[in-house]
Image 1 (cartoon, rainbow, N blue to C red):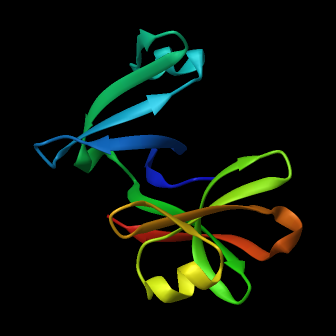
Image 2: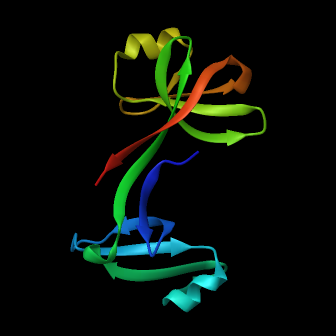
Image 3: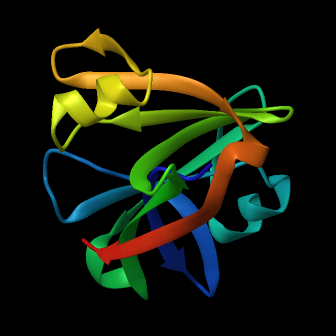
Amino acid sequence: MRNDIYAIYKGKEYEAGISEESNVIVLRSQDPNDVSKGFSLYKGTIYFKYVHRSELEEIYRISTYAEYKGIKLQAIKEDGDKILLSGVIGDYRVFESLGMKIVDKGVYEKWVDKSDVTRIYEEKKPR
């Protein structure tokens, strides 16, 4: 499930983070070949590179959603044949009627079988 910021840099998609200076972007990779593009080893198998926003071809947020019992919910993660769904924006009574439990102020979650989900899809929004 992809729920993060991504950027296209030199024709390749990377996970990205926006620094406090919103013109500086940190790119993350697990590909050791990206060292040839100026990435440095951070720890383990994670590589990173700071770039200026103007060096990117595109930057966007991808969120994964699922339709469950006719309701659009965010799909947070997957574990085997289960999917963790989250509801934040919407009527809490709808979330409760779906058997979702509150996990934080205004945040409801529930693990469901993939077979109970009608559709899983991503939405991409420019940043």
